Image 1 (tube, helix red, strand yellow):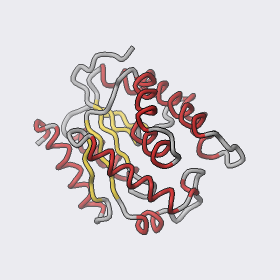
Image 2 (cartoon, rainbow, N blue to C red):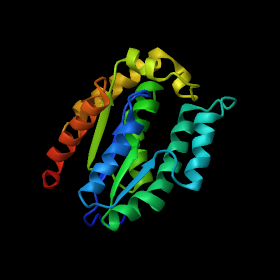
Image 3 (cartoon, rainbow, N blue to C red):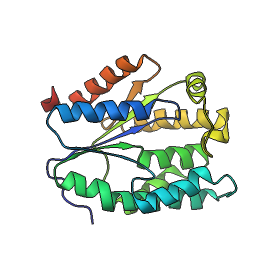
Image 4 (cartoon, one colour):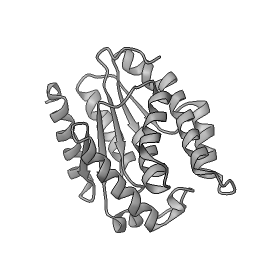
Length: 212
């Protein structure tokens, strides 16, 4: 069962690999702390012992070839644990949560990317999370050239799926953002890191005016 929200708020950052989420999550968390809020950061999958173990299977085990449905359920299992151990308790005690990915990643990666039905993933996700969804989702949008240039390191299993896969992911994010425009905001993340930070703060302030 999901705990009541108290005064805590929940923000997730999304986007294709190379969008710059990690840097912006740190900046957003520090900015929120400067406003006097307790802030918890996490990553999905991960941030719990069970979630980290699942993450290793999903992203690091190149020798394992998972069926799309198996992959989706593993993400859901890690997310259920994340809600139970991290997100739910933090929000209930009045902290803010800033997460590197959440359910929208499943919808986009296993739905638009791999071919499962997005509405099926949404339904399973509601069960896995107990209905605890972010108050605001920030999609950091970059073109494929920018994404590839920024991924100048060894790639994990998902990142290795190529440009056609990334193209479907980007289109999926933009489609889902249009579908839920009141909660999902697209941020142009091709700009300078400071410009992106400012755009994120503007989007967060628009959703939570008391932060202005």
